[in-house]
Length: 201
Image 1 (cartoon, one colour):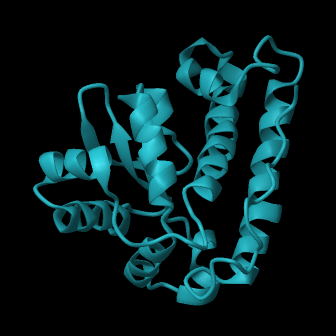
Image 2 (tube, helix red, strand yellow; image 1 turned 135 degrees about the vertical axis):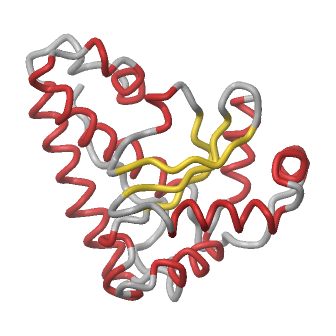
Image 3 (tube, helix red, strand yellow; image 1 turned 180 degrees about the horizontal axis):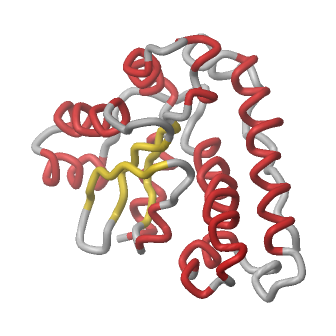
């Protein structure tokens, strides 16, 4: 089954004023669609074409050399963006609670310390990429990946991720990536993050 772009779980304008409608339309309809189209083209006719995208990303080293880079970039882009739409919500923001909050406090000392480390990872990512909160098998960690590389390929479970490619913020924030990340906290869907944390534990 070829990949397809999932519908947004909310309206394009639902994350205003933090993420503008025009950015969401271009990001979802154009950028995500391009990743899907290129991933499908690279995988067509291979044994991997019908496999779950994260299964493919876990097994990049088994892919033929001539498609590995295209799949890493584009299946990675599909996986990352499908995840990204889910961990944002018009009702987002605030702080996590319960087991997730306890785990963040244990791993980073406090929620504010976690936010600082997560933001720093995103701001300092040279060029394009992502900042992530992952479960690495032993606990929580903040990591940054280049381009559309996925933590899944490193055996990690993404719990929260912010896209720091310029296409994710440039229409509204221009070159002010730190301002974008600060605003993005207002749309984080903490119940969804907590659900993924519970499943990963």
